[in-house]
Image (tube, rainbow, N blue to C red; front, top):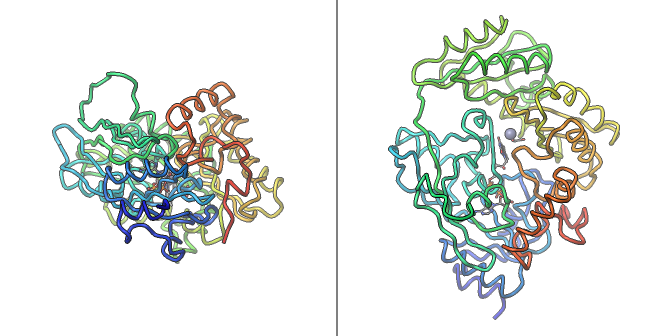
Length: 463
Ligand code: FAD
Ligand code: MLT
Ligand code: ZN
């Protein structure tokens, strides 16, 4: 029996998609830059079906790309070379939120928004957020070790993983969903899978750490004169406002683009080179604490939003960047982390190094100030043209930063991993990969470049 037929027997014909039209939405990534045809798209219903699919693929020597909500931005959640696309979307159950313990078991395919809603219902807070919340899945979030604005206070996805269940490359299942917060028996396989981007195992469920919900929130949009002033403001807020929950930034070019796309006027009376968006959360109204911290930092002009509607309005300016940039063309998205002391130099130099690398390329910058996490978006170069990517990543390393802060390495940055981490560390990573996936069938070409990897093979051809 051929593999497609055997897979259809496992998941049912309705969930084994061979028709190109039905496969299409699984085969192209959110940016439009990455993707290619899948051999077949399979949509299992539970862990047992995932394990059977992996066993069949292993026996047939067929490579697998796991996919959750397909909102990843580094090309690793879509097929590149005719792999089997394994969608976890149907594993979307959410268990009871244990408010006393601050934990919940979540199926890999549950969306972040669904987890947030379940937590909120139980007086808890999932502690992680991003603008793709309605589509991205907990399996994908954990596989990427996603961050988002609230990592300032709550850490990245890693900090929320108490344990997980996963199917390994040979079809075996490891399960640590008991929720014991102290359990150090043996190697911590769950944490090894966090941030492994589908290359070490297929995550089927996650035991997620929650925190008590803090009902009172306030946000401030602060126009400042420079990135140095933005960094100084962050330091002041960290010192003076213990309820600080997030602190992002964007530049005037991005602000104007978003205002234009969203057909709205600026809520501020004046333009500024840089805008800081800070939010505090506490049990009791943190407005006075935030206002006092801003005053002590010498800020006279800030827009305070102390109700949900106006807070969300301010966040739409920041979160709207991704979509607004997408309207300009297929973006090259480079998510880097820069030490705060070097942030000013990086932000000043990056548009120039990009323009020097590719004539006419346009650079739009925004990100999570609190983590030195800059989202460098370049529009103009062809999807396959990597000169701007190289210029940005080279500058990030020269500034003592990292090539990936929260989006992951994927296929987009795999060939940069050795420059970022060094040969010895990448050698150790390869040893782990060989031990867990000796045939190299799980997401080949992601994170660690495969032998014979080429730009076109890695990026996938555009249709
Ligand atoms: P997918 O895109 O489906 O997959 C991503 C990676 O995880 C791939 O390598 C895939 O193979 C692997 N994977 C998926 N599911 C599993 C699984 N069950 N087991 C093993 N591997 C799996 N990221 C941030 O960190 N912070 C942000 O603020 C942020 N904002 C975003 C805003 C927008 C509008 C968009 C489009 C994306 C944003 N992202 C952000 C990027 C993205 O990383 C997150 O949305 C999320 O982590 C991806 O989840 P997903 O289910 O869509 O994963
Ligand atoms: C964000 O912070 O909005 C995301 O990481 C998405 C992006 O970089 O576009
Ligand atoms: Zn981000």
